[in-house]
Image (cartoon, rainbow, N blue to C red; front, side, top):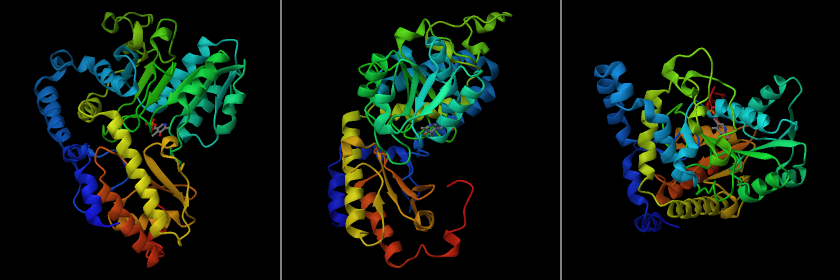
Length: 410
Ligand SMILES: *Cc1c(COP(=O)(O)O)cnc(C)c1O
C-alpha cells in the first residue's frame, strides 16, 4: 500500500479534523497515547488562565468564583457520557491506584460474610499490589485469588466478594466480556470492579446497560488529561446509599466546612472524595474531556478498529521474516485500541523506533506495544510507522549498544 492510499483513507475519516486540536510534535509519530495522551492545543491557554487568573488573582476566592469546588462532579459527569453512566455516578478524584483501594475496600464491607477477591494473573501491577496490600491489612478477612482469564467465569462462587479486572488488558489489548462477567458475578452474589484505564475514551462503554457495580479509570491516557491527571470512580446509583469508602477525608464529609469532630459521609458519589482536589491537574483534564463532547464514540471505535487492523496487516506483511508474534487478539472486536507484538529484542527495537521518531513503548519481558489513539492517529501515521519498523529490522538498526541500555521508564 502506498502513502497516497493512506492519505485517501485519512481524507475519508470523519474524525480527521479532531487531530488538529492536538499539539503533535514535528517529525513524531505518536503511538503511546495509551500511556500518556497527547496535549490538546487548548490546554496551555487554559492552564495559563487557571494559574494566572484563577490562582494568581482570584486566590482562595476561586474555590467559589471559578467553581474549583465543583471540579470533581463536573468532570465526573463529562466522563459519565463516555462510560454509559449517569452524571451523578462518576467523580474525578485521586489516582487510579487509590481509587481501587477505596472501592475494593468498600465492596468487601458490602459482602461481610465473603472473603475472596478474584483477579487475573498479569493484571496491571498496581491493581494487584493494591489488592495484595488490602488483603495484608485485612487481618485475614480478605484473600486474593488469581485466576486465568478464561477460567474466571467458572471460578466466581458464593465465597467471592469481589471480582477486579481490567477491561482492556494493558499488555495484550484483549477485551474482557464486561456484560457476561458482570452477570456471572451477580448470579453468585459477588460485586464487580472494572478498571477502565485502557478503555475510557478508546472503546464505547455501557456500564449501566451491563449493570456494573464499581469502576475506576485513568485521566492521562486516552482522555488526554496530562501527566498524573486525576483519575475517576464510578459507583452505580443503586449502591450509593449503602456504600462506605475507607479513607474518611474532609471532602467526603457531608459538611466539609462545618469542621465537625466526627465523620459523617456525604450522600451520593461525593462520599468518594477524600482530600482537596488537584485543581491544576483537574483543569487540564477538563480540556481533554471537552474534546470528546463532539466525538461520536461509534465512529471512534470504527476508526480504532480500522487503524489497528491496518497496523497488524502491515507488520505481518512487511516484517514477516523478523520474528514478531502478534500478542493482541486478531479479531478487532476482542481488542481495545492497541496492538502488541512479542519479540525477544523488543526493548532495543522500541528504542530504535523512538530514535527515529516513532514513539510506542515496551513492556517487560518482550512486548512491543503500539497505542492507537483514534482522536489524533492517522492512517498515514500507521503506514509511515511500519515503514520505519521495516527499515530498522531490515538493516538490524536496533542491534546497537545504545539501544540496549535500560532506562528508568520504559
Ligand atoms: C495506567 C493504569 C493504572 C494507573 O494507576 P495510577 O494510580 O494512575 O498510577 C492503573 N491500572 C491500570 C489498568 C492502568 O492501565
